[in-house]
Length: 287
Image 1 (tube, one colour):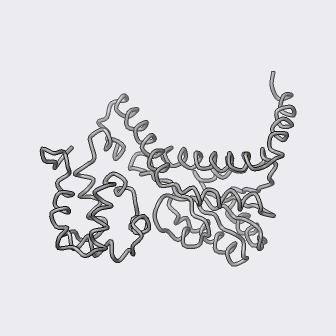
Image 2 (image 1 turned 120 degrees about the vertical axis):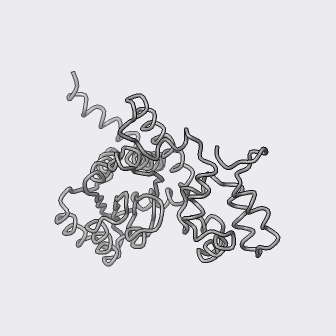
């Protein structure tokens, strides 16, 4: 690791701790949280950080400036340089000079880190809300475009196995038409890694205007999609230059879907009998 003293504590954190006497009560709270969770900070948005600390975003930014930083992003970059090891940082970028072995290591390490960080940022109550909403919905529409449509199909497949009818479409026009007929008591699940895919956000707004409940699944941080959502599910992945359609975010999204699937299956009395019917019906599809 870089920028550490003999005690092993990152230099930036030592600097923060030295400045504690001059900080306000709320600013001390920010420093204490950073000192206790340095690795976690790197993957939190300013909104997520503020929520975790129980303070305002303005306080977070003010504290960063009191510590000599230009803002929250500057803090994250400086902290990452202090604490991220070469092994942890290999998921940041794949280069043309990398050997096949090195590429394999980077891809797998990136996926492992994404799963871990996504796990750490998941909120139990939010997953429960999403599962309850889907279970109680009169009608369910799942939308995603491009890479995200594969995730939408995976969710639809799992819900059908639970005996829950859900629709998904690859065509953005049909998505819009279908969203226009959602009403109160219905549910829209909108999937977009960036949270900024215009057609998906537009559909979410239509569904929201129709009083349907909107569940979003996107990478961590505020986005046009999360601002339109009632329930936000987040992954924590970093897509890089050579992996813009990286498998990391898809695996993390599918892990979240599996959690929702399992929660519903455990709470749905008819699920076990349904599984038996499905297996019996699919037996004819195998040799």
